[in-house]
Image 1 (spheres, rainbow, N blue to C red):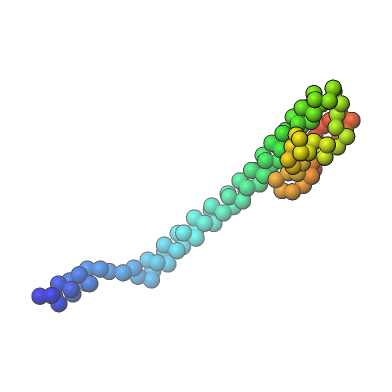
Image 2 (cartoon, rainbow, N blue to C red):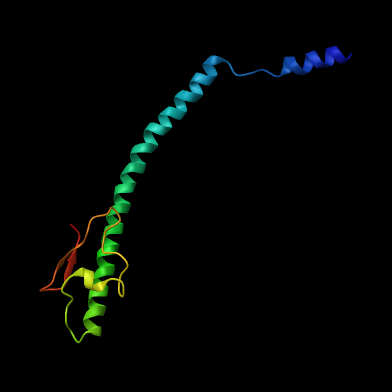
Length: 108
């Protein structure tokens, strides 16, 4: 009795065939081929937005420096550290450019 029950249980458990596994792997690879380029494209968009936000932040801190110093602009962005900003670099490590005559901050 025990052996027949055991045979019934193992006979009803059917594994995947090689063809079924290959089809599943093929479908997964197609989904990855679709998803990966979209993720890299969104990464460049995020880096661009981060750079824009950093420029706006440093520009506002230039204005704060100007208000604190009776309208005088800083000579360089290094004058803003550490009192106004922690870093004057973009998220990808490039240093922001600064026009000391107009007080404009821009990304490289």
